Image (cartoon, rainbow, N blue to C red; front, top):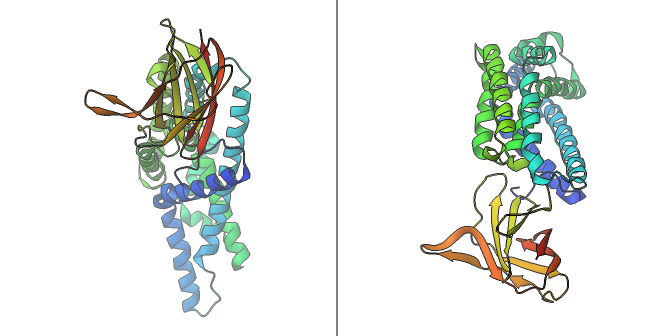
Length: 333
């Protein structure tokens, strides 16, 4: 599941992401959805005690999960389209924090919207669903679960959008946002908490826009950006599944160094088998193995490298990491 990240355009990757998304939603929404699920189960037990037909709780939960599954597929499609659009612009990685800042500010503003308040009021009162939205039969239970799922989606989509910015598999943010969601729906002061979360998001988004270097927006990294520093070191970034790759080339010797991080967890990837294939004039014909780089105190976590002598020009470099590949452009002056 950790390899299933949004933005992959193949059906297999999309299906893998949808499965990961459902597991993640089940984990994050479990505390907040438990009261209404238990209430539905209690109602069914009461019907069984009176000799009336009962419906399994799984029908209600299934309707709830269908809504979040469709939301995840829609988010994945939006991610693919955003990456495709970003690959045709010159903004490159410099625009990523500003895009993330805009998403977070929008999520904060949504916390004050009437729609948010209506959906939150519905989620905070599970008896409303039982008293005014009860449906008999399996199809009725499925509809009830779908209705509650739509209210939950309307209540929480802004918070989930923030998760796309900070990294879907960032466990710290997942836990923090899960607590926020549960607090909004279950705590007596949940309405006040909702507004405080909105203020927090707006402030965080504005800070990201003002100080973009402090926030890498790991969930939104674009593919194939290239830049040169004043010292002549050329860097290029790309994503390969859940991994963020930063390739640096130091002329004139052609010293390649690759930094590999898990873009969801934000941690260095160690002990990986990394190969590099270079396409261009005078490039090696076969793949080049990038061993882990060593420092004074042993191997440097997440850093791999090799020296490849190349003629001046522009080259395409394909990095293969754990079966995931990404192609970047480099320039040798």
